[in-house]
Length: 359
Image (cartoon, rainbow, N blue to C red):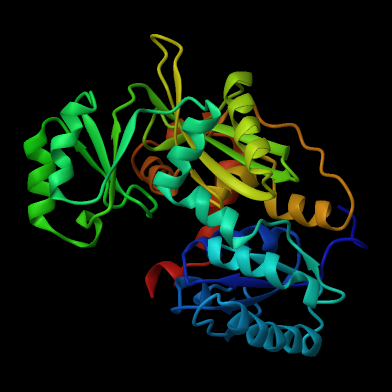
């Protein structure tokens, strides 16, 4: 992306999620003036040194009349501050960008899909049905509407262990691995917001976790990165055409535009691959992609400006989580000799911006 096509002042729409901070890291590497606009509750990213301006811009709901009014306020803000780029840091932000982009003349909108498409992919049961009807490999699953549906598990041939999860959620919040029916009953008795019906119950898929991070336009994957989680402290980059083709099938079937992170499970003993869920938004390990050589935020703006973004996906190497790096710095400094330099650059970027983690 050239200096002439790169946006100089970017508005980041956020619902207050920590994901906004990851997007700020990518924009900071682009040398962009960053305006953080929060639509819901205030988030940690407002304390970041990397944002240049901060504005609360509440959005009560996404009804057409509400978006119409909000669009006028957003257009006025963009005109007043000479905003020439806009991106949604999360699902709400991305959907709003898609809905309001035509009303923002002179502003390059980051590629995104409608709120309806984003909602379907984010809803774990809707996405499960989407995969089943299109032959995407996925674990067997049921939707539970109430306690009486627990009896359906055995009748449906569901085999323990099972994974119980809410329809919406991220970062494994509210997910239970149940070895027997009593574990699910105890989970429901304990209560909490993640134990409320409806729930999705999936058969457990053995293997290691893999993430397919991608940017797509009109149903075609433009760039991607694969990373495995064999080690809980590190993300290992690898290549696998089978996994990429599964991602392509999902993107094609949804005619998807935007960024997404697809969770997969790979059983090395059998070669089986299962798709667990899809997060149609930026992801919490976005820094790994950034420092491994693919700035997905820059890539999206390049596409939106009518250009292309060509970067080879890393097929080897690892990005170590910051707590793991610091631990090795203190206790096993000699091991740093084998760590790729981009790990240290990523750690330094975060260490220079401590307030979001402290306040």
